[in-house]
Structures are given as C-alpha cells and as structure tokens.
Amino acid sequence: MVRTQIQLTDEQAETVRELAMRRGVSMAAVIRGLVDDAIATASRGQRHAVALTVVGKHRSGSSDGATEHDRHLTAGSGTW
Image 1: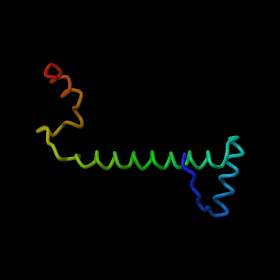
Image 2: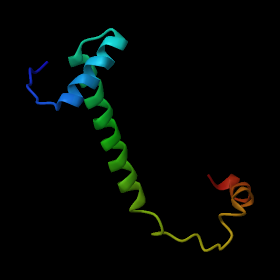
Image 3: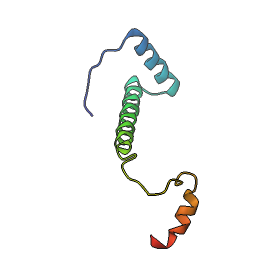
Image 4: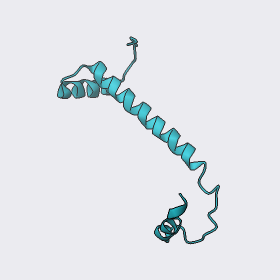
C-alpha cells in the first residue's frame, strides 16, 4: 500500500468517521472503498462511451429489426 495524505472538509471527515464507526472499520478503509467505487464507475463510463461509438455505424438492411428481432434470430439460426 502507498501512504497518501489528503485533505477533507470538516463535513467530509465527519461523514467518513461516521461511516467507519457504523461499519466497524477504519476511516482509511472507508476512503479506499470510496476510491474503488469511483474507479469502477469511471471504468464503466469509459466502456459505455466506447460502446456508443459503434451505435448506428452498421445497417442490417431490415427496417423491422427492433420489433421483429426474434423472427430474424430464428430465421438465421442455422448460419451461426
């Protein structure tokens, strides 16, 4: 682990202290958990943004793909 010093507002410190007491863990453990959550959220946001870059780039040639997806999938089931 890397020792890091941070500054919190009085309100943030009090909230972290209360969370730590309720969970029975240290303030450092609460902060590490919050950092992990923030990293996971940022990672999901990046994956979502990348996924959105392909939306609308390809055409199926069918205008009813959204409403008739089951029919299209079963009609082509032997070609996969």
